[in-house]
Length: 448
Image 1 (cartoon, rainbow, N blue to C red):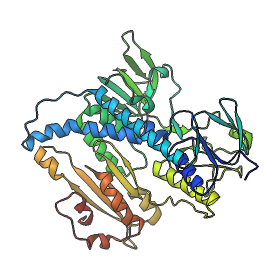
Image 2 (image 1 turned 90 degrees about the horizontal axis):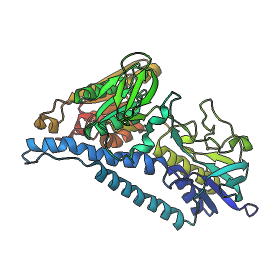
Image 3 (image 1 turned 30 degrees about the horizontal axis):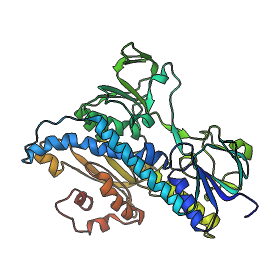
């Protein structure tokens, strides 16, 4: 390995890249990682973590109102966006420091520069420095897509939402996926007038239909507005700084902030992948095999930059498996079956395994068990909002092949339940488990 400057050169210090760097170094490899922005990647810096902190902050809007029904003399409370924003960003700084410490403690060289690939073993840094590596790992993640329409420069993406100077009074969010629905719930609770604009009539494609329909029902009841089958024509900026979103049909919408949540694409532009013959998919993702190797045998890729599952825990596993395979003499792959996921909407939803439609396509005959109930806290708080839990079972084997839920703490509950689905337990084994009462989770073993 001494013929190269490094045994491993990682481009991108996100969740997958940091894990791969740390584990490879622990196996004895000489490792460097280049990051042009901040250590931690999308999840830590501009995604999952700061978003979840905003969600915690948003929940207080209803919690403070509900507290009165529980005997607390809570006065009317005002919300200060800048206080929450600054505290969230400070915690992001703290977490970035921990990630840097992890790299430093494993003697990984951190290079705060943009890096491009010059060949199968070559990397050039923005400073002009050129280095060689026996293996190169690309873990540059994905980037928000901005539609190609007139005036698009007046909108922002999820990247910028954490740095707003003030909370907008009127916000339009374009898209129907998890980012759109999560930020809709957040800013609605902060007092913004929220409108979701979607080019189709479907929210959260890929999630169980009953669950996503329930979210639409609850969101509408809360006061979030939706415009479906809407094709934007252009965005105009007025002299007072407000925006006017115009559509090919239908009335325009005036707003103070326009957010594009129209999907994410692999962050590969300008990486120099063509210099090493690295093949891309039709959607611009890096093609890899089960061991994360690209079409160039010395270059690997993990995380959202590949054509696989775009989830932080998956990227971490891919990075770890890569390092064990290449440097730990322990070839490993990642199992993508029964990976749980959640949407931290308001209320949140979560799912694991097959949806009802997917199960019918795969098995033909399925049994579906549901529990549609009002959580105890909502009852005393005087809220009509109902939770929905759904179990999909293969009718032939009685094995649980899917669990889907929407309601308070649904992601927390599903994480444990996902183990049972992954293990292939049957509906009878759920039924044989004594309920933990009173809890929302007990509904999982009482489904009818």
